[in-house]
Image 1: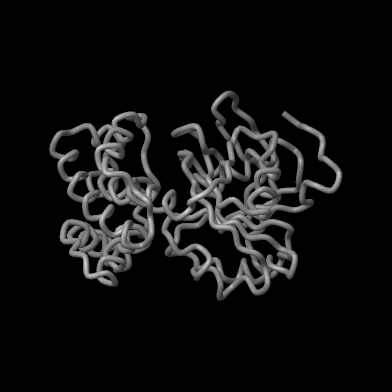
Image 2: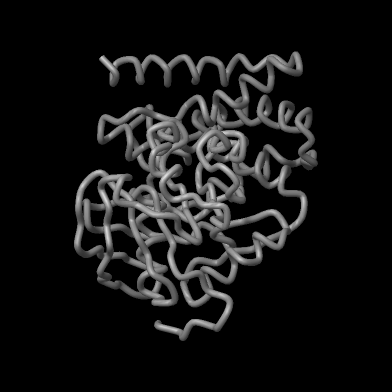
Length: 307
């Protein structure tokens, strides 16, 4: 899978900040396609990366930088760290962003542009919704699973169309479309259930099939839908049932980003997910007691990690 680079279209350098499940899959897929130079920005050096794509397994050579002082402005920067690690990625963003750089924020949450604004200068920022499941099996080994027909959803802009071209020739399906706000909140509704439930139970997504977990999911979603509508999302009356039906179709052996962080003893991004619902509820005067309870548990967990 090595299509030629169309003249005037593909960027020459793509920097990927973070080599976890999402970033590792993105870096591996782009490097395997061979249409651009991929530079990974990570904590530890790495020469090669094994990436299990849906229809093939590839081993790719990677240029990995471990010091922001060695970085220079790139055409594209993919920020794939957890939302709570954005400040830590600040030195990378400052080093990699020039006036012509385009930054795709491949993180959870609903405030992508605001989150990176202090670090990117004049660079253009593209919020994204990442649907594919990326699992880091080892430091040099990642696996991708499709969750639906779309792997990354974008607002319908010229910048988004350039991002679509970036991933041409890879198995990552990138789709721009309308009503990005609604899509963003729909993804957050998935995240406020799947991520904390799998992390706090230390179980993969098979746990979502339990009747009592389905009941808990319904309560979390009811609050989330009310808040999302207040934030401008155009959600259907059947949104809660539709989302729960979606859960039942997820791969039972798949994890979640928060699940893998919990197993590794890392901080959980509760404030970017559940915290976004609670904060928006406070802004609009909408009670969110079930989500607030989950947020309390996630924050208590993080306090233990920091200790």
